[in-house]
Image (cartoon, rainbow, N blue to C red; front, side, top):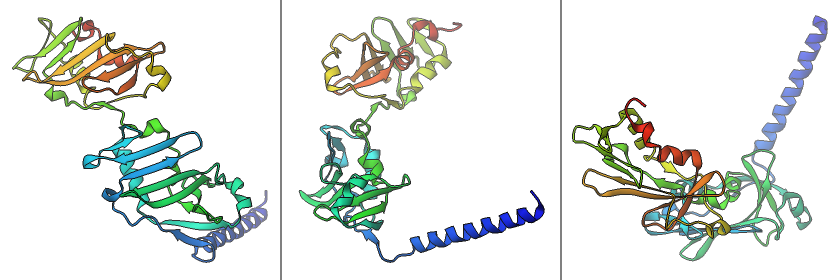
Length: 301
C-alpha cells in the first residue's frame, strides 16, 4: 500500500471515529427518552425485606435483629445483601426504548416472564419493579413498572442481583476461628494435637511439625462451604454417626468449633457445625486438608 493510500485510509478512519463520538455524545445527553428511575428514599437500615420472584422460584431476603439477614429461612450472606441494598437506594439513569406491550417479549419483560423485584419497609412496598433481560453490556438491564407498558434500558447492577442463584445468597461461612486462639485439635478416633505453654505443639505425646500445624490451623480462620445439599440430597445426609469429627478448643478448653463430616457418593463431604442444623458441602480434597493423616503432622515426615 502506497503512502498516499495510507493517508487516505487514516483520514477516513478519523472521520469514522469523529462520527461515532458525535453519536455517543448525542446519545448520552439528557433529552427525549432519558429519565431517572426513582428508587426508594431509604437508608439500608430501613429496608426490612426484599423479594425477587422468578418463574421457577422465589428469593425472600428478610432483615432480622442487628440486620442479620435470612434468605428463604436460611442465614444470608450479609455482605451480598449490603451490596444489593446499596444499589437499591440510588436513582438509576434509564432510557425509554419502547411504549407498547407488543414489544415486551423482545425484552423478556412480559408479565409471565419478567423477574419481579419488591422492596418493603414496615410491610409497605417501597419499590415494585419488573426486570427483563440484560442490555448490550453487563451494566444495563431492561425494566418497567407493573401496569405500565413503557420499557426502559437502565444503567444498573440490578440484573446481577436479580439473577443471583438462591444458594449464592446464603452464608457459606462454616468457621472463622483465629489460629492463635486454638490450643487443641481433636480428630475423634485418630489423634489429638495440643499446644504447650511454650507454644510448641504435641501430637499424642510426640513433637509435632510446627509448620504443618500452622498450615492446618490457618484454614479455620475463614472456612467457607463450596455449596449446600438439595432437598433430595438431604434425605441421604447422616451426620449422627459421622465419618469424621473435629473439635477445636482454646487454652481454657472452651469449644471454638465442632465439625462433623459425612462422605457423599460424589467427591465431597456434607459438613455440620455443632449446635447448628445447617448442612454444608465441602470438596473431598478440602476435608483431607482439614482432617489430615497424623503422619503429615509429625516431625521429619
